[in-house]
Image (cartoon, rainbow, N blue to C red; front, top):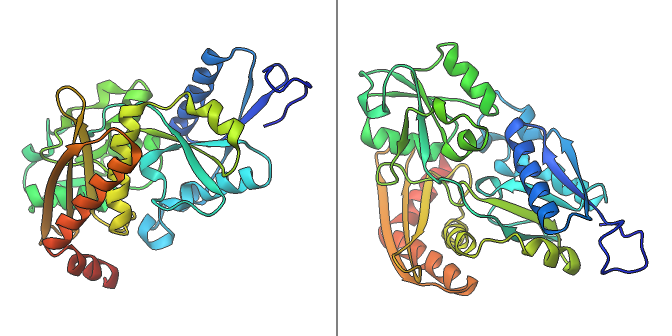
Length: 324
């Protein structure tokens, strides 16, 4: 963050640079944060530094085999390290549960619809597909939950940005695909959604549909400025989900779904999670709830859910996944 005036309280002359992936959705997210910042302080100058990450370039192998979702954020962190950017905007589900030393999440923005979406021209829902139909997804979490409901379907890998995935569907490579509803909604593509998949059928990824802002650690003034964008209820729910995943060592190679939602009145948080093998031969589920009003309580709820999964045998399942 640069300051060209002698008065640090004066926003004139301050320029913030946002590091972003170059995909259409990532740029929408960066533009959204830019607009929010300018609403709060029109005197700010905010510029977007668009980059291509290794995660965007490697499309012929699954993320779990080439370094995980951290491939989507590493170059953005390097840009911040080198002073080319002040912050990075991430889809929170793509942010590793443990950030590298020297970085921190300083704000989590209000969540969009956290559900997954069914996109197809051939069936109104994946549960209505004929036997042997082909479903595309890049996620072991989705694959596991699809197979648990429809073991007769073929689930095939689908990589690429959102537009690439839609193109592959339109070319007839799949009978239907599963995507995060939030990305479609943010890009004005609601008409592509045949059905929102209820969380009772398919739990989303930890942090799904929320945006996270990452900065260099120790940037107090910047953290305070960006912290004004934080949405408290979303942040506490996402922190509980991420604590669960972190406790289990969750990554893109872990078929883990988690979703926290507020009860009536907003004081109690309910956290549900599912963990299984990709072929759904073994699936564990848990539901916990508790009063949550600050980050420590959210973290505690996530750890409780992880403990309950371990009591069901989660460690043996995780060991089996790592050995595969």
